[in-house]
Length: 224
Image 1 (tube, rainbow, N blue to C red):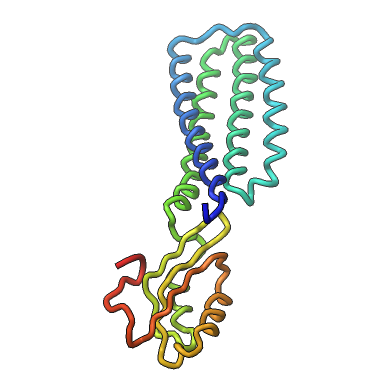
Image 2 (image 1 turned 180 degrees about the vertical axis):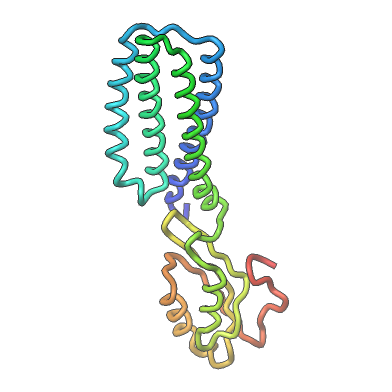
């Protein structure tokens, strides 16, 4: 594990979002089945249990709210807690209306509405962990701007085999071949320091090539 265990958080987030999607589809199924065959409500005890569950879910969501802005895994956990809180609200409202007014359609209608909202949140957020695990470029880094900046460094003739990816949620990485001029070949350390100083990249691997021995026909991005 030469890169450590930083991506455990990303994997955990992906599992959380996948679970939310499965829960969302299951709730839709449950809602449809309740529409077809409304269940009996076991008195006010169900509503009371729903209130207790809502308090617990709301407290947990409140504790994770401040942390979820900086962690994809905590954000997934927050959405999980939020979905549980919505489910408790459905139990409270649906159960009360059924017991008071025999409005049995309310419970499955609320359940399906909550399920659709959960699916919307999960499908909106799951793209981030997938992009990170698939080594996509960081969403806030413009690859062409990075390449233009690399080419503008004094002593650099060109770059190729450029890889930009995220090692973790907030850590960008750069890997590329740098073709230097004759003069640049004599000052590799200065060029390296200049390149690293221009970008907020936590990890970089730079391979230098002399202009007279540079790889011909190489792809700008990736291998080849």
